[in-house]
Length: 193
Image (cartoon, rainbow, N blue to C red; front, side):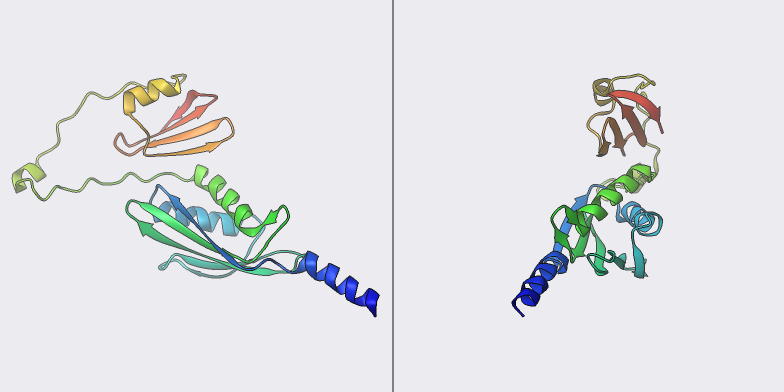
């Protein structure tokens, strides 16, 4: 009997997930972009079984896990915050090097690197007269960025990026004011969109 209790304790210590925990991350981009990446992560990573999705509310529940750790249900929701997006993930598993939350976040961040960043439309300032709101804005001289330009040259020409994403030696800078996405590899411009 003593051996059975010890074996049961050891198995439960290895298999029973830690208490559910809610994680929040804020992304400096619209929830529509993050939601597209969430759907890509859930449907194309091969790691998740989608239980339910509500695109209008930007919520999803999904299961993950295998024979050793058992199937676990996680849930997520997106909510706008200013011009950014808060991603809230309720995960039920975090044992040793395995973490449902960390694994999902890593896959979501990788998917975000693939997403096009929509350009915001400027709003008219209410304090301006109607004629000024309808008048075309004066065109400033366009900054010159070329393939091979350094990161510092990009910053000097366009200012600080609105958002940036980093994956190893690859960095993507988003400039909403210039409506540009600059990709750098090893600190040099490799593509301009």
